[in-house]
Amino acid sequence: MPLELPKDVRQQAVASIERYFQEHMEERIGNIAASGLLGYFLEEIGPAIYNQAVADVQDRLRLRIDELDIEVHEDEFGYWRKFERAQKPRK
Image (cartoon, rainbow, N blue to C red; front, side, top):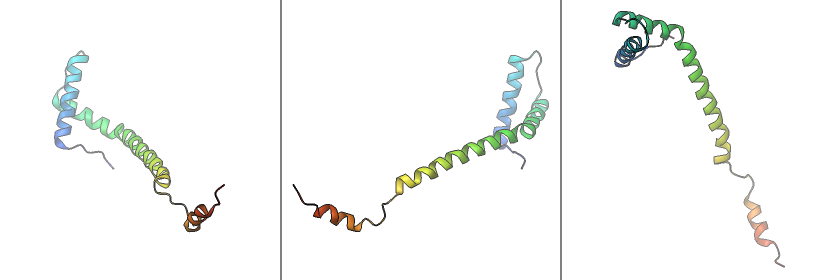
């Protein structure tokens, strides 16, 4: 599944790449070249980042599912226990 960015996000990313080249490299990069570089990164490196994000979410969901038992657990067969507690003789 190819990664697609919304148009406004893509424009911001291209502008950021242009600025990075302007401030950190010895040469400027044009809009078309910056857009191509962004496309390359999205296609080549983007899936690795996306897959890691999915794995992180899966881990967090597993933790929440494990906690769910603690949050909503009810003891079973507790009806008679309440009478047993009430009938204990006092000393």
